[in-house]
Structure formats: C-alpha cells, structure tokens
Length: 204
Image 1 (cartoon, rainbow, N blue to C red):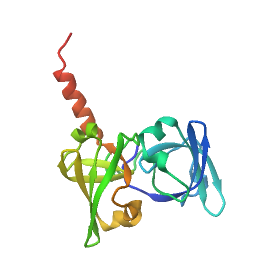
Image 2 (image 1 turned 180 degrees about the horizontal axis):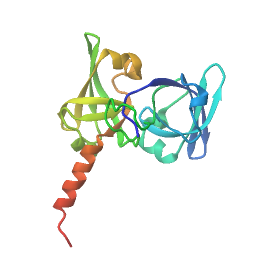
Image 3 (image 1 turned 90 degrees about the vertical axis):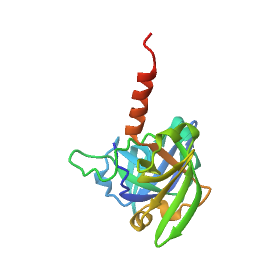
C-alpha cells in the first residue's frame, strides 16, 4: 500500500527482455541495506517487487516486470535513461499524506495539454472511457504514482493542477503534451461504484 507521495526519482540504467517479461534496473538514492528482497516499491505508480539490490556509485534495484503489467501500464514504453517516480510501501505508523494507493494501475491516460503559469502547471488528460466514471471534481487520482486532486471533469477528460513542490521533486516537471501516464482511480470511488452495482442487480 502507498500514499501517492513520491519519495525519490529513479533512473532506469538497465533493461533486459526475458521472453514475455522484462528485468529492469533502477538507480535510486536509497541506501542499499534498507531495501529487502521481496519488498514492494511503486515505480511510476506501478507496484513492483524487488528481485535484486546492488551498490556501486548508486543503489540499483532490480525488478521483474510481468507480461500483464507490460500490457496495462506504460512499463512497455520504458527505456534506459527514463526517470521514474518512486515510493516505498507504507509501514505501520507512517503519515498518510496523500490518499490510499494500491499500485495496481487501472489504465493509461494521455496528456492533452499543459499550461505553465506562476510556477504552477495545469494539465489536461484523457482517461480511458471505462475509467472516466470513477473521476470526480475534488476527488483524488494517482498519476504516475503521484497523488493529485482532480480539478475539473468533462466526459473522458479531466484536469489537475500541480504545485511547484510537486513539479520539483517528481518527474512532472518533464512531462509533455501527448505523453502517456499511469492512472489509478481512487479506491473509494471503485468500491462505491461496486456497491451501487450490487444494489441495482436484482436477486435471482
């Protein structure tokens, strides 16, 4: 479980194709001895399991990226040199600064436009049609692992405003119109929709 509060930005330093999956190495600022094999780390919003840790000039964490993950996230587009928002999993007693995020990406959104002003950025996105009903004005959404507030919703399109701090400590300062980002809808919205569906389904 995560919060959508990015704690580091890593860089892909290696990528190996393994049949239907990929093995990637991500350089980060964490101390190698603090990362356990089998730990979960959200990489651009995708929950991945640590399968190796090495230390040279920087800590390099290895992840296995399975076929299903490649099919439904931007991970299939990742290449050496790409930078990824990173967040380590919550521990009991940690502050919940964003909103509850599972790291199970629901789909991929596209950046339609970006408007920079007063050190802020307003971005407009198009969500997959089937996910649009889970987006609500003033609700939460995780985009590339970053907890953001939805400012406007119109059909399949929505907007979010990014503050200077977020632009500085994440990859959002680099994002451009036309790029694709991982989208995870708010879990509360998903459960509410499921409850409503169950209530509307007649008993057999």
